[in-house]
Length: 179
Image (tube, rainbow, N blue to C red):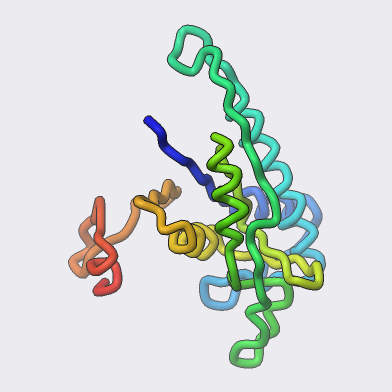
């Protein structure tokens, strides 16, 4: 099909599980996680686990299926440059970040080599700091940077709802901006 695939995975439930296991109390302000040092350790651990499990699943050769004999190469890396959210309304969000830049050229090189690119919702500063970003921010910014034809979200929620609460199955950019 000549599809070039970039997967941005989430890890919210896995982060919550790591926090529970390590006795770290989650803290949210609005819908955004406050990522202190303890929470960041859980974010790193959870994202590492999810990334390895995704790579393993993409390595499966499913007998008696079109995937039998497939040779899927998966690349991941530091494609996301992030900046701290900082202090908002008196709340220091610590290691919670926002995407500053996507290394689109680096991703394109992997795609040109027929690799699937797997990106975690974690970003890095030019000084090596690690930031917990949202998968929505990373996926959207990546799609924009790559001038992607499609951006597809697979989430645990039903999806986007219109003004009357009805599920919207697809949106143009203009429709999304209007919503």
